[in-house]
Length: 153
Image (cartoon, rainbow, N blue to C red; front, top):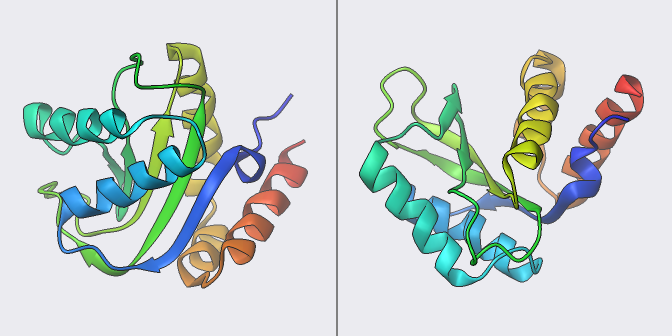
């Protein structure tokens, strides 16, 4: 069975404004909180992870996967999607600036791997990525991700 990102997303925000990488992660964390996947403490944990380990969450050009270790602040698995109106620097020389932040709350390592596999499929599809970057509404994002999931099934 293929993991469907469109169905897993509990929150989608497009064309958001963020002053810096911390604010961008906070927006992704707000989506996880609003979707019931995590508490606000998890957002703080995601920011602390980057402060401690550097911008390892910037996984591809322009894309950050904001996450931290499974913790009591994770209530259930969840994803949030935040496209930024203006990209922000995370400090990753190879992949900055970031215009898309995906928030991930995972209850265990296996869930994290499922999401990474699904994301790899999206990231490797250049036409889908162009459509996702151009998306101006949550429905636009869901349509593109849903089409990819259907094609992969």
